[in-house]
Length: 151
Picture (cartoon, rainbow, N blue to C red):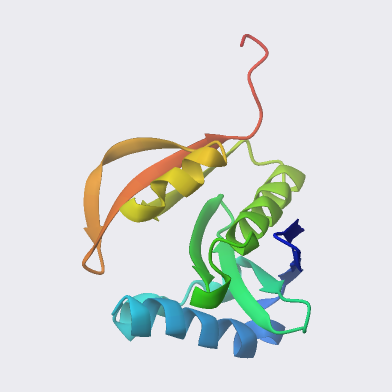
């Protein structure tokens, strides 16, 4: 994917092989920038998730996200210098493509309220009430991947 002349490469990765690249990104974004407690960030679910990494043209990892088996997307993190340049969108698209290949008909996520517009532009819509997670306001969101024949 290219946004504003910056090539961004996204690939599915295995946690066991990519943990050393994923951890620093999530530590920077969630633990340092957003003050998420370490014990909440490292929830033990990573080995069972599908992970994606975004790379810049120099080959540095600049963003990551994960999806649980039932289609819950989370831990979307892009390093500050790369936000607004297409990395988040590329990560999300890669997970959505993976979900379709797995035969999932819907995906869900818990969006920080400041990111709701980003997810709405990708076809998600808000469900449920505002809630706090790690001291940060969130809303649950959903996207249907396969339309019903009756629509």
